[in-house]
Amino acid sequence: MANLLLFITRSFFKLCSFSLSILFLISCSSFPSTEAYDPLDPNGNITIKWDIMSWTSDGYVAVVTIYNFQQYRHIQAPGWKLGWTWAKKEVIWSMMGGETTEQGDCSRFKGNIPHCCNKHPTVVDLLPGTPYNQQIANCCKGGVLNSWAQDPATAASSFQLSVGQSGTTNKTVRVPVDFTLKAPGPGYTCGPAKIVKPSRFVTPDGRRETQAMMTWNVTCTYSQFLAQEAPSCCVSFSSFYNDTIVPCSKCACGCQNTTQPGSCVESKASHIAPVVNSYTPLVRCTRHMCPVRVHWHIKLNYKEYWRVKITITNFNYNMNYTQWSLVVQHPNFDNLTQSFSFNYKSITPYTAINDTAMLWGIKFYNDMLLEAGPLGNVQSELLFRKDKATFTFEEGWAFPRRIYFNGDNCVMPTPNVYPGLPNASSHQLTSALGLLVTLLAAMALLFGHA
Image 1 (spheres, rainbow, N blue to C red):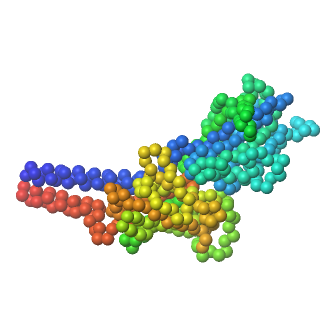
Image 2: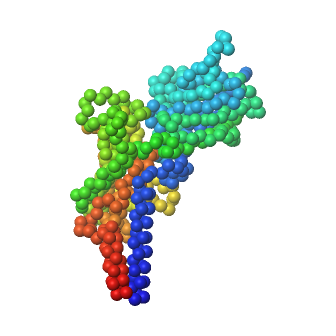
Image 3: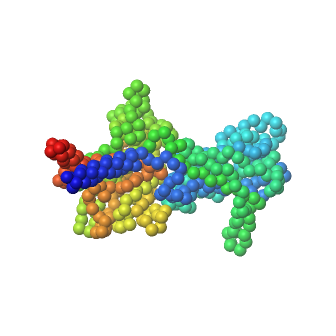
């Protein structure tokens, strides 16, 4: 009798433990992170450096540089917008490499009219093709910035401004406040400006070093929760060993609004006249309602290797995704042999663990993910070498742990629907039901003899 009671107790706790594990996995896989801290890029941020290069009769000339120190989150068209609030009654007399979106009220000035008299100016980058006499180094890209991992040389943007009515010494100048950054929409939160050691510059011949009169930095961090109310991408799975195709979760990025026509469009709607690169998505009507879907297909199994096909599909009629990027977390990336038509770089925020890869398109070949339609997809294949100590097709090991598209965490399928191996009918759920039946039978037997 004692042994029977012990068996019943252990079985009950096993069942409870299994149920809690499944609920935990489902909760972790279904919803992307909403915090600004990114565990795959813990030091990623956008830093704004404001260097006062010289003093003028009523202010100073400064060069402002925006550095994108994020490993895989870039700024695409229509580009960044940088705003702030002046601490005093400053005006911008002139600019190079950028311009303010509004001039503001300059009616108190006669003769020489400032470029901007707004208390809360917003600056944008100039477009490519700007006359040379209006350019400075690192300007005029239309506000587009690459991520640091893709190309550090194009991950910075600069403009120059001449500020008046501001003070003409380090003691009389006041740093601006309330910095804002849109890239191109919301998502970034900027901290206060902090005065730091003046920047140093080396002349082209390398023989002389100069420094700024004064320097302050502003750090901006990204939150997917602030960027959009709903996720922007989802993931689907399939494999060669199972006919089941696991689609994106239903309503992964929202549900179709049947009471509001125009919230999505049918795939065969030929009358659409999309406004490409509009920030507001116009998505094809699907069960998942996501602008982007990433499909992971386990394609082939060799003796010492295995092969995966990745397909990224655009369901957004309003957006061509330029300089797109994909981040995938999987333990076998420490043995990636070849990426066939995507660029690849290992992302190792924690040096001892090499399980995360950044993938992006090859320039002039597939670096642009076109709007929804027949050409709105890019694909590649990955070849992995097997590690005999860890490799398995069982229990969903061959599927990724996490996927980001353009820096946003995608909604993953729940673990209980992953494609299983053939004849894997003794799944965890079936085992749990069997355990429950055994438990009930044992209890019936116990009370029957009581």
